[in-house]
Length: 256
Image (cartoon, rainbow, N blue to C red; front, side):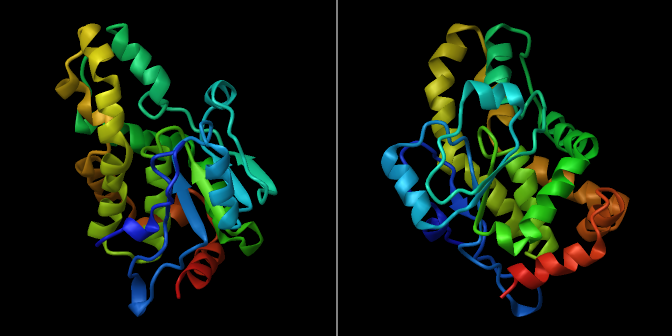
């Protein structure tokens, strides 16, 4: 499915896009111009902020840790009325720290299984943050809403998958949305880092799953939720403790 129209063209953020537009349950589609996802917002230009203001985005949810947010302060725009930090920490997701540990030789390899384990750990350890996120997404007063982390691939990728799965989007399309990060950001970012990492003795191929969005990592995460919890809705209700009425309202608001 071509997603070119969903991408928000920005100079200072590579992975900003509309979550909507996918075909969903019961012949519906996910509403567009309501929920957006992105990588960090600390390098936005004035033109970028004007572009985002044009979408009327009023709520920004930041999954980065306080250390990340302090180091790279978000540059918000005129229509933002709510900036909601929901910090989620993870050694792979915190990309700057992750890259520093690669350079130091502390991390020499990352497998797809490692990425999957980190996703499941985030959902377990930070379930309350993801639950709060879903409550904000459900609230029409927060729309349009944008959520982000540093790379817009791990914490943000999980959050986007939660929404799309609850809306009944086909699993392959959910995985496509996750994997789109590679062509928008990860591939370019890896090339930017390649010379310095190789100079430090890093084997790029051995750490590639941690620098990219490996489709199998998200597939295995969602498959685990299916097998262990009976699907995303049961997981969200029983493990994240989101009210079933909120899940129903999320669908009512997002499906058109």
